Image (cartoon, rainbow, N blue to C red; front, side):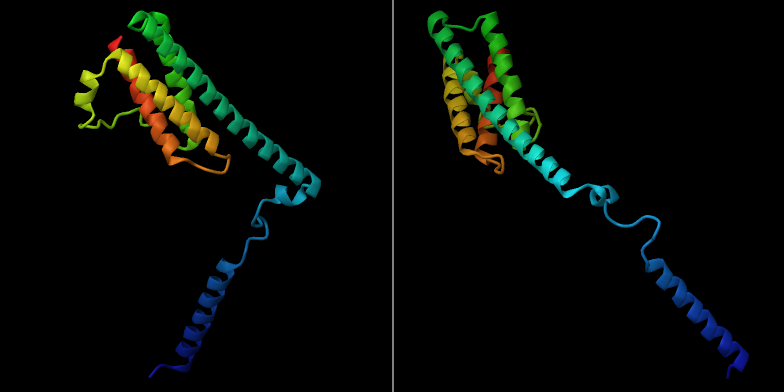
Length: 181
């Protein structure tokens, strides 16, 4: 069979290969796992950072609800203007653009996709053609109220699919109003 020298070489080779594999699995002492900065920070500093993060989250949620209030107010003004004039003026169209901008911010904060309405619903197209400015503004008003109601129900820990859908509906109506003007 094999000579004793070859057997010894094979055994030594296997031992060296095993040693190399084991050494490759040891953690690198130069770069320890975890964040070394995190370990160096005092506990009170970490607690302060966490409190600041919580306060920022609360502030962001409050701002989102305030945007909802502003959208409802603007949609109410638009409805009154269309009731008086029968159509949208240039000033009203700028308000519609403001609504669109605010709703985009709300939708992104809720975690909604930023597809900008590229998905076209084939069943909704015939209805849009028959929709007048008056009907669109009334629909905008009711949809903004739905959105605001959903925003009031959310917390900074929740994501509301209904609120995201309502924001998408408001965006579609705002775009329709801008186009038909």
